[in-house]
Image (cartoon, rainbow, N blue to C red; front, side, top):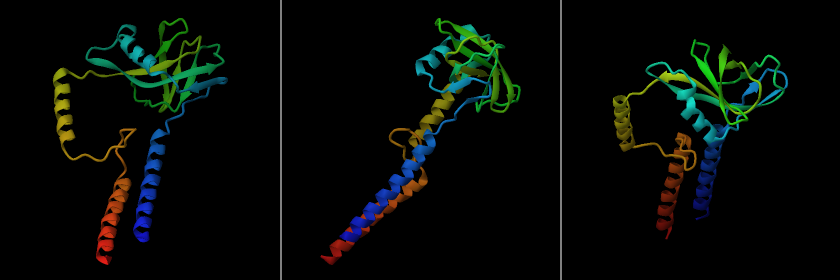
Length: 202
């Protein structure tokens, strides 16, 4: 019985360690930085601000036909406003491949402004025309998804959901690593084997 308890405790400890490591990796987001002197970048932008930005994007931007607006990143700036109104931000998920980006800026007055964005290199942008700091939502244009295409994707998603799926993490919704599943399976096997041995000894 002591061996059985020890095996169960070991399995649970292993599963918790692996699971905690996986969740820690998922929680480590990208930290944006600015190479502009005196400027501090924060990634704490409220969800309602991001939602409002995307809702207003259709009227704030001239969206090309067949395209829609998609959020790329969001951040807040603080510190010294440069005299030339240009701030450089690094570690942003952009590519220097000719893609157009715009920065939607929630002004302190509650109005929205649109700033041009220059992609310096992969992950590095310069936002122009800044005269104050408050939340920025970086957006780009992507091909618009039609109703028929959305329906097809929904059908595929339903079929995938019906198939056997990997275990889901209870809070993050991300797939639990295979190592955690293996550890839990091994623990269950240990309980079964241990129970049989106890029964035989009796």
